[in-house]
Length: 242
Image (cartoon, rainbow, N blue to C red; front, side):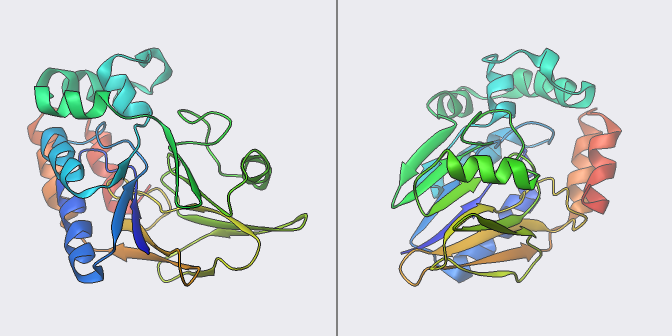
């Protein structure tokens, strides 16, 4: 089974549409979403409907929960809180219902999925070797998927040896070796210096994975952010992938 893994869409419809168009060519057997469909970006309702239609497994993230009022926005940056409050005002009943049904973790097909981490599925960032090792030691399946950091990573635990790190476009992983922690990166707000939308292809039969990036019209999303009066910093950061 070939699975496409997406995460951290953040209401960036143009980035999502570019990834979904690429997936039309990839023809995966399933699509898994690791959460944060909304927040930061200008098109929450269309992104919710698109993910609801395409994803076979979907998680919720901290921004989804913040928009729903399930967690306190005091934990958010000022820009993130402002975007969450705006999203609350425009979120459709269907989008709200979709998000309310989601959980921040799942297990399926020999894979454990978390929006953030096994220790804290909503908030913890896995960006260090220590955090990656903890995540792998707190789980049992051969593949662990996380999102939340907006940074594509691939970390291998073989015995007690931990290797790996950033996973730029084209990175290929042999899943037959040891246990892996993988982050597909972000569709809608990458933070690894590459502004292109990110996704991950995982072949659970042949035991391999590959990291992908795809161009999208960043300037169109930037214009939509500004048209809606959202913080300009949310538009500016998209061009640099930061």
